[in-house]
Image 1 (cartoon, helix red, strand yellow):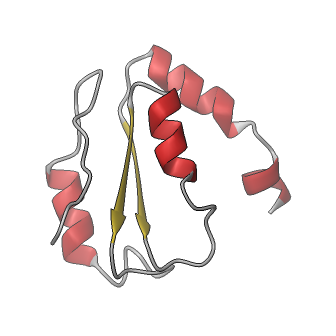
Image 2: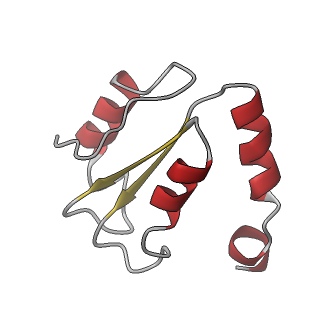
Length: 91
């Protein structure tokens, strides 16, 4: 908890990746009780190379619970400076 959530050192990593135009995609299950709601969407607004997607019925077991959906994300993963928005990807 301390090193992953409370420590904001990962902001440096996202800034570095954005500066180098490396696309980052956060994928989560909408039914996951663990993440902070809206956090990855906020990061997608802050960083030009970040995309946030969510699966409507998946929970904390993603990607194990939805491997085909996760594979689809890999197939359509953004490869450009400003990734296209993936508001709803259904698998």
